[in-house]
Image (cartoon, rainbow, N blue to C red):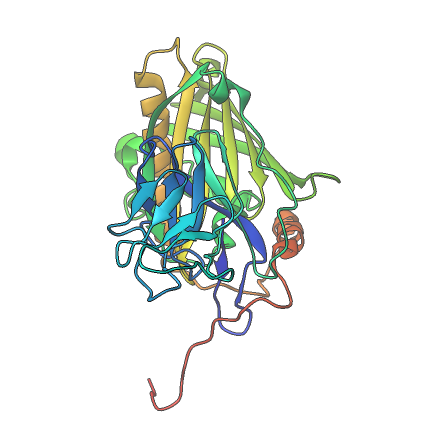
Length: 356
């Protein structure tokens, strides 16, 4: 996703990443306008008559009309609603100007490298203009339809982009924030309510970066157990493998002895420097009752919203006070540093003339 880190003195635009758009409603001839500005860019996504999805800059280079608002798909081109200029999705070349004798060779619009996989469209962003350096892995169970879609959640989080996936390396927070029963809800003021105190989630986890050639990936292994009145119910044990790909895509694969297997695709897309759009999509075995994945997604949503409360009200610390048990956080930050560039733009707050 295109990613922005945006804190005073250390803020910069992410070097690389992918942007995500849901493809289920993107049929041939339809233009999809990104719901939000991503990495400061407005993009238009359309599916041409050749069946391919294309991503281009939203604004026509002629007089600045937004191609995604009132534009049309004509063959494999997107047509500007203002003057009818047509731009080819493959390379952005303008091929038709209805009132001009000749189309200038330099008349074109920027196109963005993209790929369709796992029911999503991913767009490559690199602040230095470097071509894609890795591929998004295919989840074969989604492609084969062995796992089917069962819904999604969407949240907007006011936080530095790095802090959301960093939770995977923050092992200690699991039992501090997520041990309380999900029946206590997401409001941190009430998660220690005595009403459901007899139900506890326990977590064991470890985080590790992956070696070359997958050094852009990291993996977290989580073992979840549930105790009721202090008694462990092994039938409710769940193993989760969380594979992070790049700065903002995580595959959360669930495995349960009786309830089967499935995945939550977790994507983080910057909307503004300190505003992230987070989407969780769940796919699950098609031979399992729909109530199972829907319950898992609801439980994930409750737990995630506990984190959101903290993220929305915390401060990013470039040099946090850590103990040795927090070593995974430091390793995570060293790993994540690869997604920044010396040429990245920096986000600063203007202070002149406004004292608080």
